[in-house]
Length: 147
Ligand code: FES
View (cartoon, rainbow, N blue to C red):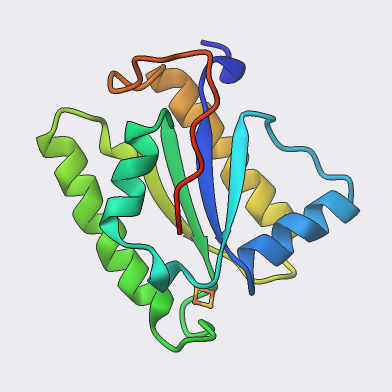
């Protein structure tokens, strides 16, 4: 399966993961082009519904990238996100969708290389799983989740 045949939505916290993605761009680090980065104020702001809606709107995989544990600018936002991702993964499994399609990672703003590795790993995992069975409109970019 070609990575270009799948789409991954990456919710990136503005304080860490988004800054790391920005740094990755400055460092000219490459990551797969099928990843759509969505800037979020904090991963704790993301409800389970956002992950599910991303799948509904055409994503084949969803990556949630927040600050390192203990470093969230809103104290426990990333811990809340961790619990929500775990809950959503169970929900996906019960719904017949592979839970591996949803993953959370933690990086600091300086961890551009680690973030690109996480993105590559996610792209590889989703590529192996293939397009989401929920995605009936392949070939179109997923709509942006409304935050
Ligand atoms: Fe980054 Fe909360 S501010 S995860």
